[in-house]
Image (cartoon, rainbow, N blue to C red; front, side, top):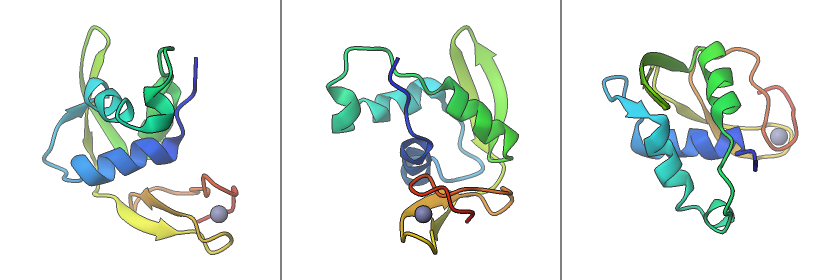
Amino acid sequence: MPIVGSHDIRKIIFHNFNDTDVRFSNDEILGYLNQIDKYKELDDVLDFGDALLEMEKSGMLRPIAQNFNTRYYRLWNTLEQATCKACGFSTYFAPNEEGEACPQCGAKM
Ligand SMILES: [Zn+2]
């Protein structure tokens, strides 16, 4: 299965669900992923369950409910744009997340 980069998921959440009162699901994230060209062309099922689990562990996603394969989340804190000092890549982190690494070069951000 093609693995989805965490930056793509963070970007979708930042642009569509960046409010701690908003509930969103993995299915809604998948709907946005399928609008991105590099994923749209793929016939395979996209693998982003592990990426979501990492975001739970890092303190970004708050799991609130599950119904069969649909998982619902809220944000603990709104995401903020962050730019890597090493390579200049911009991504999105919650301020309470610790030890985050740049998805482009791996440097600590
Ligand atoms: Zn970087």
